[in-house]
Image 1 (cartoon, rainbow, N blue to C red):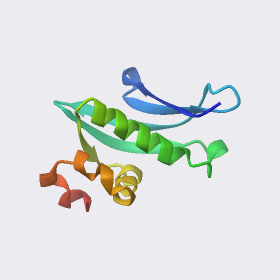
Image 2 (image 1 turned 90 degrees about the horizontal axis):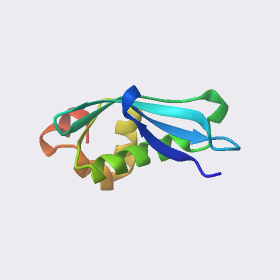
Image 3 (image 1 turned 60 degrees about the vertical axis):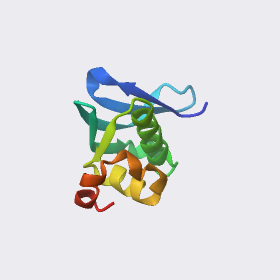
Image 4 (image 1 turned 180 degrees about the vertical axis):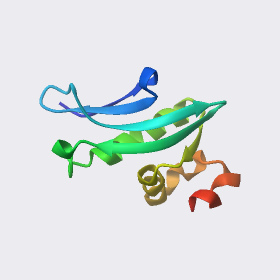
Length: 104
C-alpha cells in the first residue's frame, strides 16, 4: 500500500502512514497553526522506516496541503527547511520578507 500523508489537527501534526496495511505511523511533522501561517517545528521518521524516502513524501504532502489551504509556511524545522531548499518550487510558500531568516 502506498504511504499516505494525513493532517492530525488534534495532535498539531501531519503523519505519514505506511507498512504492509498502511496503518502504521511511520513519521510525523509537528506544526503550530496561527493566523494564516503554519510553522513547522519538528519532523521525525521512525527508525524502522528510515531510508525509504518517507521524510520527503511527508514534507511534500504537508506543504501541498498548506498550499491548498492558502497557508504561509514558516520552516523552523531543519528538515522541512532543507527540503524546501532542494525543491525551489515550494519557496513561494515562505513569505518573501522571511525567506532570508530561513536561508531561502
